[in-house]
Image (cartoon, rainbow, N blue to C red; front, side):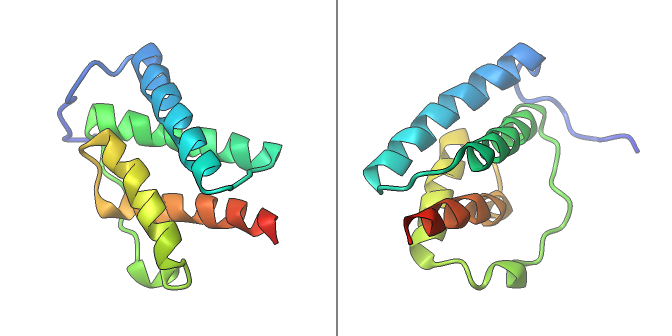
Length: 112
């Protein structure tokens, strides 16, 4: 399957990782500000997801269709944090926040 997306920016593995690292450091600040602590496995999964988001941001590759109903149980606060992270990229759709919200919600559950 060939993508019709036109690369928006440099999309080398190094550029993707640099963008992911920048966003991950900002996520760490958001987590700290909201007293969210992810365990090692959750951090690894989040890093993998953020790298994929960075790649989509730089290449213009689209997400497969995502159903909003799957994310109805995510709290509005978590969704707002996820959207804040997605906004850091500047060019990703709201569906990215839906997917990212799951990582945040799971990490928040560590507090309980």
